[in-house]
Image (cartoon, rainbow, N blue to C red; front, side, top):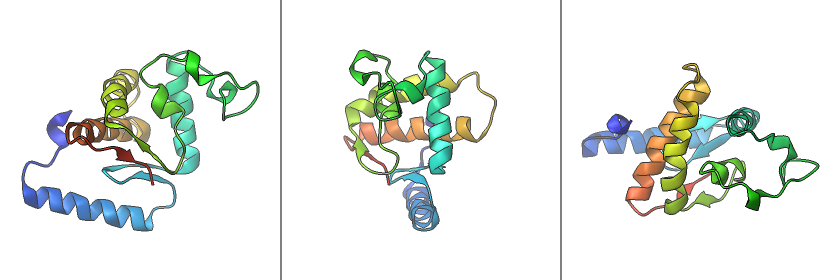
Length: 139
């Protein structure tokens, strides 16, 4: 899915300007280096869908509600995205390298909806930031 990356400096500047505008006017979850975005409730539903794909009920995991199953027992590559804060913090380049291919794999058979489109955009941008040695910033 690397075809979404900007191929020249003008495209990069335009994309960066679009991202800044989205971040200034969007109420929900966005990323500093990506156009992917969800409302907070939409991101929660998206992560519940991802968790279900690997056989986890997200509402039972630590930080989401009782009975607070611990995250350290979850070894799937998607775990860093599932347990991440809704609106702040970052994912390391190493986490992005691990999460991006797993994210693509998990959504591959989903209908072409908002979640799938954003997931693929996010996976592309995770790889791009990781290649630069940058963290993906949640905002």
